[in-house]
Amino acid sequence: MSVGVLLMTHEAVGKALISAARHVIPSLPLTVDAVEVPANSDPDIMRTLTAKHARDLDQGDGVLVLADLYGATPCNIGLSLGELGVHLRCVSGLNLPMLLRVLNYSEKTLPELAEIAATGGRGGIFIDHA
Image (tube, rainbow, N blue to C red; front, side, top):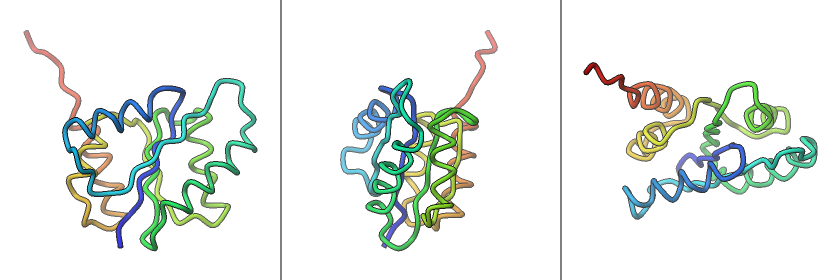
């Protein structure tokens, strides 16, 4: 068994990140899916649709939700899935280094992957000191 990964993003972000991850790691070691929340969508309808995606991803070890922006609708929907019985951890601030780090530690547990995601996301940010 393994943890499923669900990207909760604004339009055109999640699928692009999955495509970029496949460019680096052609055979993804975890099942990854994206729910891209359209502008002006009904959050209740999106929550219901997202819960189905999350349940499909959960093979018994839970779902790691990676959200693009804390406090925004995609993240709020991801966080609310726990109320619908989905076993999850949610990490916001999604970037490509975060996703790749998670994929490189596919054997880890859900709580460990949440920490790895946060560390990977922060660790992928550099400032040019020129």
